Length: 165
Ligand SMILES: *[C@@H]1O[C@H](CO)[C@@H](O)[C@H](O)[C@H]1NC(C)=O
Ligand SMILES: *[C@@H]1O[C@H](CO)[C@@H](O)[C@H](O)[C@H]1NC(C)=O
Ligand SMILES: *[C@@H]1O[C@H](CO)[C@@H](O)[C@H](O)[C@H]1NC(C)=O
Ligand SMILES: [Cu+2]
Image (cartoon, rainbow, N blue to C red):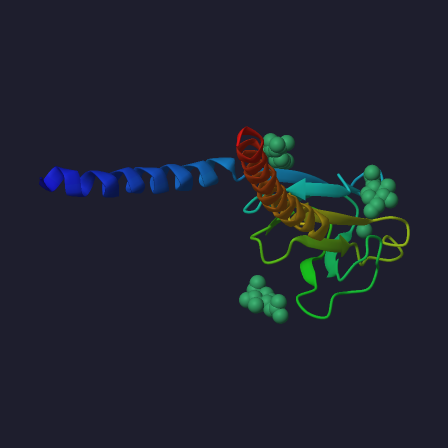
């Protein structure tokens, strides 16, 4: 009697634990090379999952990482929290895409590096506006077609009744 009360809870706990483990396991570290042979962030355009950590590795030259408000290629700092890294020549910094932004833009603030193309974008997979809208409208149309199919089925049944009587 006691066990029948507790089993559903322990199943839910296992499911919750499994989902937590899954989300920890799927959080990845993605490398971006800063500078080196060219004035670039490589890869320049990155799509990551929520919780992923982007690791910027300096490969040569003096570079900083400053956030902008976009669009891609903007060399103007964001209003607040603009710096991911001050200018330096080696080492690394990490930036976690924790879900507070669905997309971030950044650039190197040293010299004319940004104008030369030293900027990058990190987007969260599946969280851009178009994707959200598409997902919403498709589920709406499924709902509408469900109603329409329901009406057609009902009218079919009605007409069958009409024909046989
Ligand atoms: C990322 O860079 C670090 C340090 O340079 C290296 O140890 C690691 O293997 C790299 N990871 C990937 C996935 O390339
Ligand atoms: C990154 O995306 C921009 C458009 O936002 C594009 O102009 C640029 O060529 C892309 N960079 C690379 C390396 O593909
Ligand atoms: C700036 O960053 C700090 C630490 O990451 C955070 O606590 C704070 O909320 C941020 N402020 C804004 C305006 O984004
Ligand atoms: Cu630079």
